[in-house]
Amino acid sequence: MSIVVIPARYASTRLPGKPLKKIKGVPMILRVAERCLKSKADRVVVATDSEEIMLACEVLEGLESSMSSPDLQSGTDRVAVVAKFSLDDIIINVQGDEPFIDPELIDALIDDLEQNPDVKMNTAACTFSEGEDPADVNSVKVTMDKNGKALYFSRSLIPNDRDAVGNVEYYKHIGIYGYRRDWLLEFAELEPSSLEKTEQLEQLRALENGTDIKVLKTEYKPVSVDTEEDLQKAEEIINGMV
Image (cartoon, rainbow, N blue to C red; front, side, top):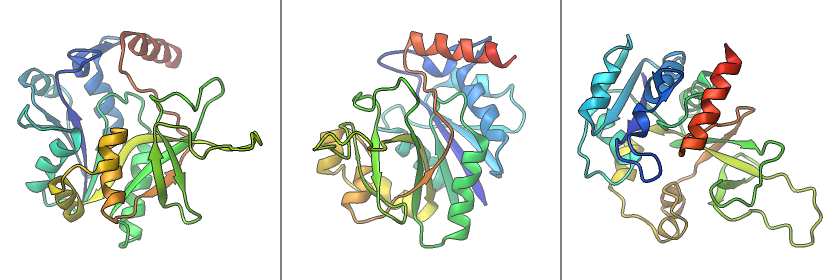
């Protein structure tokens, strides 16, 4: 059994009340949930600290919601609370600011965990779009070994093109994660690691504790909403799809 959990915290430094911001009249959290419900996951749950967000979720058939403490430090902690009281073995963590998340990507993570019992955790990456700057510290980069396992995640440009060869292919990390339930519960109990605190990247905690993260390459290009400008861009995309 598999479950998608969408952590949705009401507070946001750059965009307060972000999950309820409307994109063409629909709250963003429902845009994300609608995409997740198209996946093969058995359940989709919004994990939130807001009664207002829970109320908004009631209008979407098939969507569940769960209240958790506002004191939780991260989205992963919020997902782990849901997993603790769930019997689903495969947990997919979809960010609540990805209104165009690809259901097929969710399916790919689920399939990978179902078919490879040795994989405890997986995620995804894509190449940078034309015009994007891989050196932007807001874009997380990932390097992988020949078997698709993550070597490192960084806000810095990796790998470093020391001799300026110019033909390096950079991979942009997409903030979606698949976990086996037991590993997620173990992960949530681990103390933040030194590299994690340095880069402010939670997934480094897994690598520092010796757990591999498999990275699936995808053609999907994420459109995350963190600012009013991002919100406007999402509105324009929706208008172009109609």
